[in-house]
Image (cartoon, rainbow, N blue to C red; front, side, top):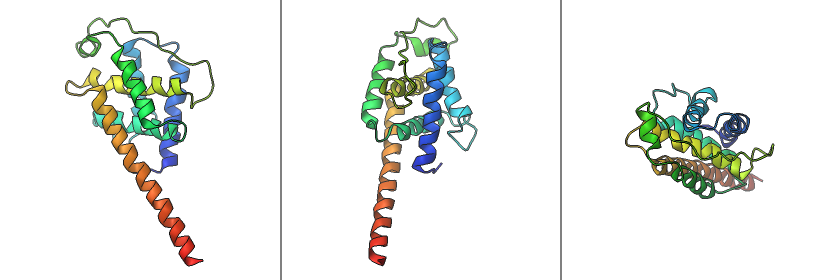
Length: 176
């Protein structure tokens, strides 16, 4: 999927808005994983069937969120804080989810009292849910591997956009 920065940022904004609206009322681990899946399927982060893509759909949704955060926070800041949030989950949470077992109690989800869809804690909360969904549904996937794949994809896209803007500026300068 090759979209512009603006298209991806708009989808990332929808992810942030969904987190802000739904997280206060639905904050247990299973709800958070299901919401991450909804980010992939309902917000059209992919052109293909999100359920057949596996972790790629989660990565793409996370890239959308990073495009939304671009200019406010670095990808590293958002992803490092989100990984820390996932690391604070109780031991065995992913295995319990995959086994349809009793889920451990989730730490309180911090949802900032704001309407600012660029609020750092809001972005981290949504990113953490996407990172949770990988290991919860796929045995060999970790939150770190999803974060690394998303960061690499985001950086490649951001560099391509920067290169295109520089090329267009140089061509415009050369023709004047």
